Length: 582
Image (cartoon, rainbow, N blue to C red; front, side, top):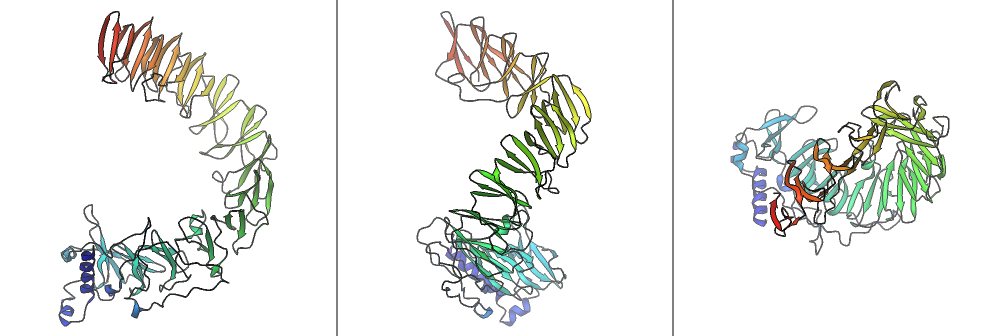
């Protein structure tokens, strides 16, 4: 790697040198020579460790000495370096640039696209096919080379031009002068703040401005923008979380106040529309955007209900808190659930206490005007609808208190954009938008078999349907059960095979066809698609894949022969026969 590094650095220096007259004459011929940027300024890589990370305390503590000033004159001497690691699991040894780039590669026809809003520069690149990785450079509209075609990435941002050379990143200004040397394998802009989190992917990060000047003294294992995890986090970053180790607590730094707002005691942090939720070992507190406490409470748990409110928990009782820190519902409910996924325009919350349930908006108004025995969300696919229950009867309302189905049904399912409602022995399909009757179904009962399948009944006979109420088999059976592997040497199981009973006889079906007809006294699944069947005290074998009889029901005993799991000994009286199911 050392030889590769020296060779690569020599190539970069060669491209950058423009001192002698001969190279000036050749500049027009070779569009890959550097006119504006000295590649020798792109410093060699660092190896990062997280041991003995510098302490950073509250602003009142003694400040750590700032790093050396970074100027263009001194940029070739990397001001940011790390000691070699001793023993750690995440130190990263990176090459400064790619493996040797053949100059002949640059003779390939280059493609180009407009790079900046004013149209002064073009992004030029070669490669990028299935067989080669693209390399990028910059040229002006006359074709003059500004940056050679050696970069893996060149991105134009509001904060400058981010470049990647080999595995390392740096920052240039809009005239392609070096602001931050290309020496970091981790480089993340902080949105709207003209500063950057730089360092190693596996630790040793710093916060720097556009000139590379360190804004917060010390090296950190991790720095991240709390706003990035916020669902409505399109606005400018306000706070960063700093951690010293890969494990342990963090501290919150305010970019507006330019100081740490907490000690290194934060276990987790979350942004919400009104401020921040910070969890410490003693509990969770809520702060506004200026880090003033929204309430005096310490909560066991706080979750972001939606962009209007927080669900808070104290001693297993839940409450609803507005973004301004005012209680919409006190902490005395067994459960509170947001319907935000279903209607962000209204902001509705289902609250339950004991056997009573109701729905409120973010101002605490009861949206349905009454209390029910149960309220649940209708479906993830049907916006704004709620299943409401009084006694044993169920209906459907939307959160604007419009009745979709009256509270008079025994059970209501949402299936394929329809409501299937059961009243007595009758099942009917209704429109989800108007509640209009679509048709009456000719079966009178539905039962859950598992999460994927249901049973339906007609004239006391069972059929199989999907969880979406798609009918899979006719109602022909007295009983349908999930098939299990109940033979002692079978190791497989299947939930798409079903054991059926008809007039006391057993068979096996799938969701599409009959595997073993229901004519046997018993059927046992052995392995994969092999079934042991018994009829009138005699045993046989059936291949479920081909649905063919391997051994007829005439044997007194059938068992594995010990040689292969696919070979069976079939015994009839004093005679034995070897049968293979392979």
